[in-house]
Picture 1 (cartoon, rainbow over the protein chains, first blue to last red):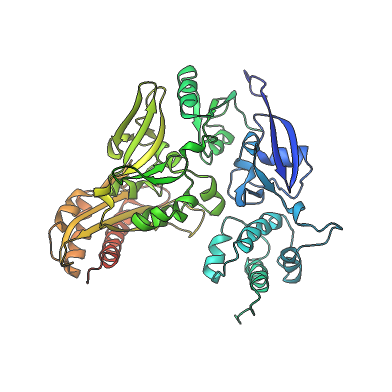
Picture 2 (cartoon, chains in turn yellow, cyan; picture 1 turned 180 degrees about the horizontal axis):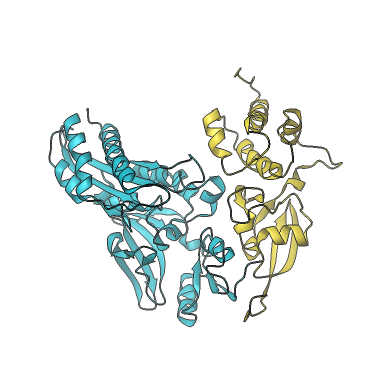
Length: 170
Length: 293
């Protein structure tokens, strides 16, 4: 604890993967702290903790945010989605998760939940993006294993499948 | 956990002003993508914070009674880019802020924070200078408005007085009407990088689209704060459009700018890309305005 810190807490109530939840948090906590420590959402990774790597990415009211540089108290009233929320009732993988497996878009897996949540925002927009647009939309994530091509292909493949269109040849 | 001394949350502008007055040493936090990173690095560790992030009244873009564009200070970069009024009247600003950081940063970063941190490399700053934006500040004595040029005092310092918060950025109608602009960010990477140089040009052409009626250009990272290149503007104003004019205009920026040597780039390299960026942004602005080159 910082010297001279005044202990302060705030009760936040929000929706976590559709569930109405409530927690009293230390005002110094980041949203990553809150999601990992109080709700066991361990898909939310602690990577750089300065908003550069994207490993802690979650969806807040439908938009992608790095939860490491988002104060936990700001969660109040928000709809927050994590990777855990994508699983089916019996733990089935969603289409985008399966595409990451099929395309070998994962090696160590640390960046994967963050990438997949950005992909969810992209896919749920219902738009068809070019490769350049997809690269830009995914540019807030660092992957040190795969070289990005397989990740791009997994997102692109799922995008075309959801749009009901054949995927163009590379 | 962040190493902060205390956190005060403002629910309204009046609340924020009261908190600023009660805690003059506290740091304002909007989206936090600068403040929290600096706090983590130890630079602002142990400080009190006043969070204004929850003041929804400071979000969104609108036209006021005189059709001036009003951008709420907490409007995020991604919302500015997607805003229909911005796309219609000030598309260059939407394009400029679409080059900040990466997607997640553009969802949390606010235009108010981008200007209040007083950094010369801010992607919004050169365009706001080039459009002579007016900063609206609300404090204990009410609202005051100040040209953005006067708002920037020196590197990292803006004219935010005791008790005040920035509440909006205004673009006067006369500044955006019939005006078309282009921004060029020069950086080492195409995402998650800070500008080596930012160049924002806009032009208004005469009715026959043969001459430059008004040309404005501002740079980021060409000096300690964002700056206009007035000699270059004077070299273009009133002149007939031609490729030679684009070259003259571009070369004249060297009379106005004063970039420094830093680990990102040398002074000489910044001067080189300033001339080239000015020329390209001028040509593109003229093209957008319907002129032929």
